[in-house]
Length: 165
Image (tube, rainbow, N blue to C red; front, side):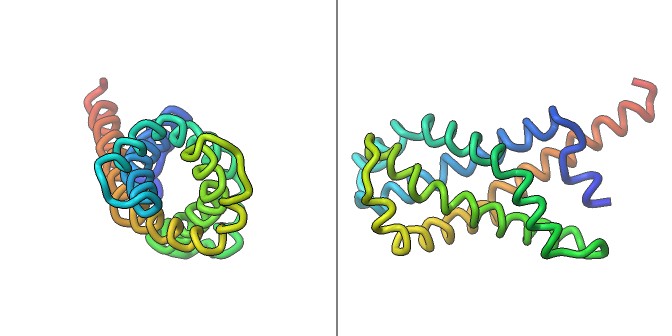
């Protein structure tokens, strides 16, 4: 029942689900990583706000590009009878890991305003931190909120169909 109620059922719900998760994630993760890079100052936060629309576009594009491979990897790790929580947790782990690999480099390029070798040179120092931040946000904030929205949408549609509307 959790799979049916808490996850998107069609492409419009999927778009809403991705929108909710990506907006929440970018608004928390981008400022945190920027502040870890530049220091926890108002100037660093202002810089994060300036780059967030570009980071958001990159995040959405990468989510769409990696959706199928991450689903495939999740199916390889989980089995048919696994609980909703275990499947979702594994999916979040896989997705955040893959996205953190790309965004550690691409996000630094967007934030720095140029393509340089620095994010690649410092990758193994920065990616674990970025992964941990993103994993915490996804597991504890963004995904639960998005799933709550899905439950509300599905309950509303179930009520409407039950009453002939």
